[in-house]
Image (cartoon, rainbow, N blue to C red; front, top):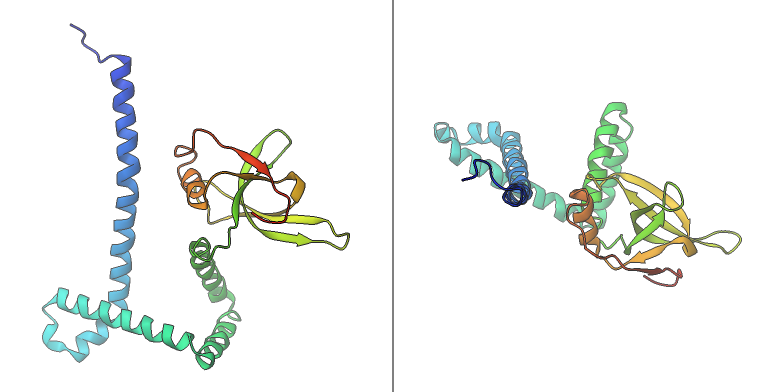
Length: 216
């Protein structure tokens, strides 16, 4: 009788543990973020609710729900205003004032960039997934094609965003000659999964074809 598990059993156990972590960690992070967001929303209007409805002082969950509903209503009203021409100009004017404040403008700009980065895929900013040779010939890196630019010599350059891993919301923008770009047979969503998992979630085969600059 063997006292220690076989290597195949240990390998199987390790794979199960890794698979479990990849399932539970995103769920846990999502839970923490959602709870933090709800608490933040409630804390904004909770003092006001306590003054307007003093009878609910002892009922924390009632005040919490009302505060969240009030916050959602506030966000909805701001969205409606932002959808109007006059409201949009008013928000642009307010944003210009915020960007003039030294410390506040840095925080505001960073927060706005994060929101825009999250919505990049929805707006189809990333046309396709590409591979380019970087940082030296013989090594390829995954990037996202955002468009094509033509210089004064009529040479076409692909605007390629090279994301960081495992946080693809930050990275570098490069202008790459279109003849040096290879289009990969992987979706933008699949590339994000590969980057966030540091390559653990990736296709077994990756086919590419040249990019002519005429389409994706």
